[in-house]
Amino acid sequence: MTFVFDYKPPAKAPEDAFWFLFQEHRLLLRHENESYEIPRTRDVEKLDPAPVRKQFLGSLEGLPCFFAELSDDVSVSDGFTLTGLRQLFARSGEDVIRAAGTANQLRQWNRNHRYCGQCGGPTEDKADERAKICPRCGLTNYPRLSPAVIVAVIRDTRILLARSPRFPGDFYSVLAGFVEPGETLEECVRREIFEEVGIAVENIRYFGSQPWPFPDSLMLAFTAEYVGGEIRVDNTEIADADWYPSDRLPKIPPRISIARRLIDWFVEGDIRQQKT
Ligand SMILES: [Zn+2]
Image (cartoon, rainbow, N blue to C red; front, side, top):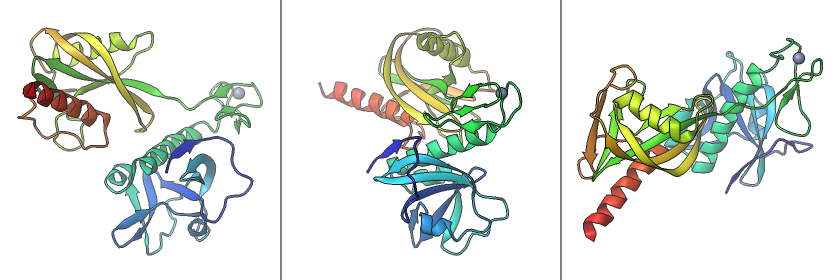
């Protein structure tokens, strides 16, 4: 039950191949009672007008999967629904979520790179890798990734959590920010934490990573220790921030995110310490 990213399509899409079909940011799902499924080739054949800009994505559960775009006026029949990707989080397994996220990221890249950024000519899909090439000037474009750090800052037995006006919902989370050109990940961790809350950190350790296709981030998670400074918030990026012990956490992000994995790591480590 895995999702494998690939660029080489099979000669023919089988009847039961998966299709990730987007109308802007909304994904088409087959909806039966309480279950939501990714549509198959036989479902897609009934759509009118037919999806456009079809691309191969890879394989899911051993079956080929594709993505494409739906026009605004497509008629969605009974038993189908268009839903936001974040809603899929509560309804699907991790592999389906990863495949759908990757499809959404590539869908936008595919649409935004139909023409060459250098000479303006139409581009073509490269045959031997996931890339667009301009036959006129030779410029090659790969899907872009935007690396971002996400950091659990620990001060003794408390974790730094903040609320941002950008977060959907009213939860508190660990701090995050995009890596800038010419910057190491460690420099980015120090800069982001200092810029957003005025805290200095050290002992930065890699924790793990997660693709975050909204639209094209790769989250690189770290843990770090407080070394100095007092919390101050700028009220634009961050509305509120504080140090929280593991037994008095505010509302935190859902389980699927690496932010939540960092917070869970802190809570579990704290519980272990209390036991010894
Ligand atoms: Zn060109």
